[in-house]
Length: 80
Image (tube, rainbow, N blue to C red; front, side, top):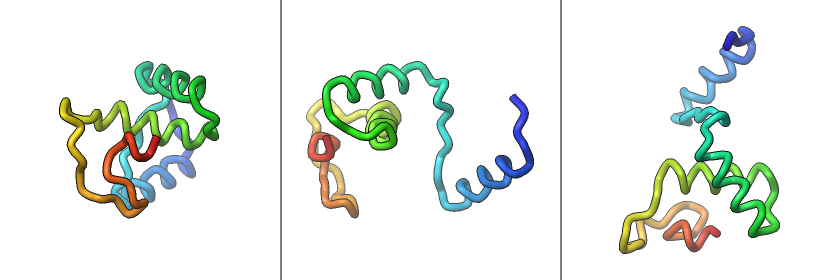
């Protein structure tokens, strides 16, 4: 897929902040987002944030609390 120069520049700028760009064509991400949206009254933007977190960083088997994030939650279960 070809990108316009403006979009390519915006993508470079986002990457300089350490953001990882994940294509929305990723089927697992779509499925997880649809599942969350069907279960909870969450905005579409937030649905993709949660789905990305769940698909890119799945919790470990024991679901141990990880470091406390700036938003005040310790695990993904606290977020959802």
